[in-house]
Amino acid sequence: MTTISPVAPQDSTLPKVRVDMLPLLLVPVLALLMLPLVGSFPTWVTLTVAGLAMGMMVFMMASGLTLIFGLMDVLNFGHGAFVSVGAFTATLVLLPMKGWVEADSILMNLSVVGLAILLAMLVTGILGWAFERIIIRPVYGLHLKQILITMGGMIVAEQLIHVIWGAEQIPLQLPTTFRGAFIFGDAALEKYRLIAVGVGLTVFVTMFLVLNRTKVGLLIRAGVENGEMVEALGYRIRRLFVGVFMAGSALAGLGGVMWGLYKETLTAAIGGEITVLVFIVIIIGGLGSVGGCFIGAMLVALVANYAGFLAPKVALVSDILLMVTVLLWRPQGLYPVAKR
Amino acid sequence: MSEPLLELDGVHTHIGQYHILQGVDLVVPKGGITVLLGRNGAGKTTTLRTVMGLWHASRGTVRFAGGDITQSPTPDIATAGIAYVPESMGIFSDLTVRENLFLAARSVKNADRMDEARLEWIFGFFGALKKFWNQPAGTLSGGQKQMVAIARAIVEPRKLLLIDEPTKGLAPAIIQGMIAAFRELKQSETILLVEQNFSFVSALGDSVAVMDGGRIVHSGAMAELADDRDLQHKLLGLSLDNHQ
Image 1 (spheres, rainbow over the protein chains, first blue to last red):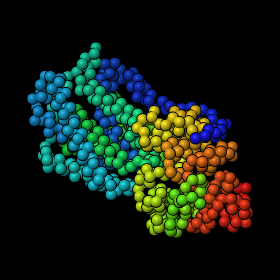
Image 2: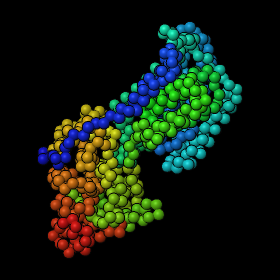
Image 3: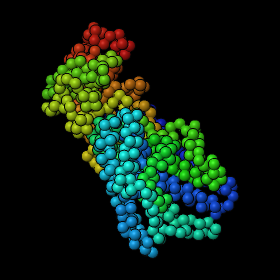
Image 4: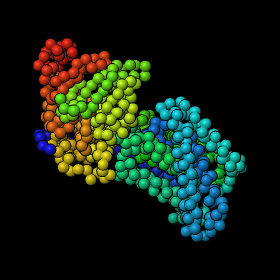
């Protein structure tokens, strides 16, 4: 190997790395702007924590979907089915082990919820694998057919839930030590909401580390931008597709368990009801962007909570208004993903 | 001529309803640079994409290092030892230069384990990459992105490099640097180079094939074509004069 003169030495102005900070500032700025409007500091704290908790749960459900769209270009309107299946699968652990749920022991409560989450993620991950092979694979690249067949898949999943668990609502009891609130001054912070924030942050940090520090993560990011080039480098993008679909479905299952415990009542439509919100989040964030999805989820949930308190009638359309405002500002979403 | 590394025998490729390659016969010998010339729409890029398995031949055979790769999936072709630099460069703009090269270094699982001697060899060609090592590739200039694309193809030893119009849109000064780089590269690599810039490739190529209408209409030594202006005019038309 010989060393020669570098190519084009004049072409070497150091480009500055531009970190787009504006979207990152949106959440704290929104929260601070709402403080004088809400008026009471304890109420503002409660509303903000509630909004963040809801945002984290929405992020869990939406993060997989944004990757599925970004990497596979698949519009999966059946994503809500994994939320529902995840929540109902959790009942297979939480209902028979009611004693552990009702025990006044944080260890027993954590164990039973952890087991329920593991089972839900396993079932929804496997279901995701089957869903990709049977329903998605024949319609790659065909958006209209994707919408129709995935919506059909969700209807089938909801009906199967009715068949297996019955059409009645199923009450889902929150574990004893997850109930109640911590009181800070006049502000009450519900324990379960804080747990949801913790789980959501853990999911976000894990995804961030996987996507930025591992070869598989880099391949996923590269595949979102240019799947053909990833194949030309010698990697089987189809395997990545399947892996991401399974992981995205498992995350929706996790979100379903958390969401079900939050609502404390399950219906087969629990996933379908949140699908629109999940799509708003991934559109706001920039399709395919996990970071954008995280900020989008926080914004949607905070705006819904503040609007619900300040102007309940506006709350009904607050998510749509937020999406319109963001898209007028940034038509590709907060963090658009580069595409070939 | 040394033994053939890549052979295309009567290759036809259809893209949708369009019949692009109409019986391509091409031999790329081991070592040196084989140049594929031709006007826009002659089928040069389609030939590279067909070799790479990004579009599959509807008829004919593609043989690489003695094996039939006509219907092989793209990842298998890549792992067989062919690297591809597309016309669009195909760099991952959200990833840093280091991460772009790391993904191409299939044998290592950790970016810190990339072959340092090989990297220094690459920096010898493309010094700017060392400087921009941790910059997102999307922030680089066109010439620097082209360096990333070529560096990615050679970050590990490959048997054959397919490079599609590396000088497209680049400033003359950068093209001169590219010529120096390719001159060194061809000492150790086999390259099939698609170009329209004849003055660039006439100084580099060992053998040449000219395409027109989805077929090879001429093949031989580059020196012959470079010395014969009538043949150049006949094969490549007036556009050639504009390049000289």
